[in-house]
Length: 129
Image (cartoon, one colour):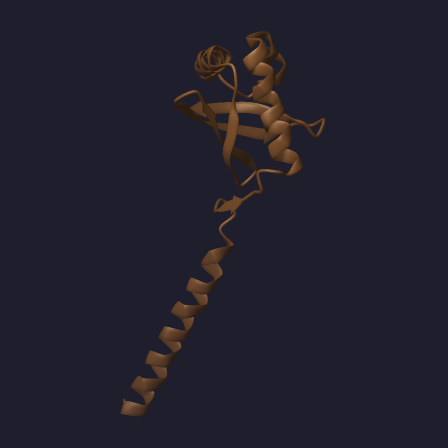
């Protein structure tokens, strides 16, 4: 092979690599930031403000997909939110079909995962303390 053919093969390989790299930005699970004053963020904050009033609200906002262990962790977090008395939404983003938000209550911070419900509301799916 001549040096011209080697150069053409090299350019083709680099072109394919660049094309693949550019397409990788279409990751459906990449974090998509969300404004804290958006409708979804306000709906999520309303859920947690309800939980500061009463943990009985948890039964209405928990997803049926949440397994019993997750439900226990959500109940524990709801109790902590109720003890804190007030909550503040500090961060929110979409990851795939799931909304992940960070709630600050007293000195503690919690990350919650919510999903879009069939009735266009939000349902709690998990918590990370």
